[in-house]
Amino acid sequence: MSDIRRVGVVGAGLMGSGIAEVCARAGLDVVVADVSAEATEAGRGRIAASLGKAVRGGKLGTEDRDAALERLRFTTDLTDLRDRDLVVEAVAENEQVKIEVFRTLDAVVADPRAILASNTSSIPIAKLATATGRPGQVVGVHFFNPVPVLKLVELVPSLLTDERTVTRAEEFATGTLGKQVIRSQDRAGFVVNALLIPYLLAAVRMLESGFASAADIDAGMVLGCAHPMGPLRLADLIGLDTTRAIAESLYAEFKEPLYAPPPLLLRMVDAGLLGRKSGRGFHDYSS
Ligand SMILES: NC(=O)c1ccc[n+]([C@@H]2O[C@H](COP(=O)([O-])OP(=O)(O)OC[C@H]3O[C@@H](n4cnc5c(N)ncnc54)[C@H](O)[C@@H]3O)[C@@H](O)[C@H]2O)c1
Image (cartoon, rainbow, N blue to C red; front, side, top):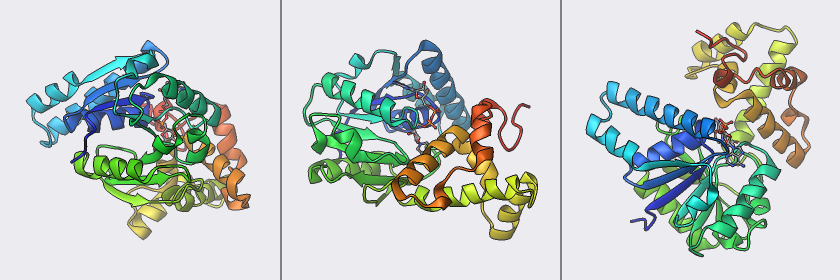
């Protein structure tokens, strides 16, 4: 049984709010930090909406929903994470921003045994670990979107992670959160994104070249391959800024053209068309 009871989550976006929700539903005390009150309020709203959906779907009782909400606190001050046993970083996919967060967590989190985990999709864990004075305690714990629904967690030790940290993180993900774990070496993209992102980028290139419409590309993979959603809708769900950032990390690591983000994806992010979270991406979500 995991000894981790007090969890911190940095970043209250799509993933941070999902991670905070599953931790609160598992009975843990959770503090969620973001840069502004607007961001923490948006995170709180996302969690409340997701819990409401679980209640309506008969997966959660109203008392359990209320108890989960009571276990969550929100802050804009990372020093509120001082007493945490585990902190999961889920800020934007930007190496410099993440390194700064890890430096601060290293200075703030009091227990030297506490685990500092990253939900990064593609940034090497070793780079985040060496920003701290406790690289043995830093590990990748990569959840999937939507976190309350998808079972998988990729566990990514760096060359510097202690085996005890890996075991504790695995016990937490499986025993406490009920997730299924696969292990990956510390390579950009780990297992799933190294396979998934080239496929999503190929769909963007297909659209960009006029080969087929967005609706037909998505319908092709849903109806022809029984995928639950097509690649362009999936990129919209991940967020086009996040998809672009993961592709850039993969390209920087492997220098393979199949990982290079196509110009259409770059321009859509420049234009603020980020997918579902902004209301428009390859498809329209405004209504
Ligand atoms: N979107 C996905 O499908 C998905 C899946 C798995 C992993 N991830 C990874 O999870 C991480 C977060 O992605 P997301 O989709 O939740 O992004 P998002 O844009 O929805 O949320 C990022 C949040 O981080 C906050 N933030 C930025 N800088 C911060 C700082 N210095 N301190 C505190 N908060 C800060 C932002 O205000 C925002 O609320 C990324 O590393 C991403 O690669 C994303």
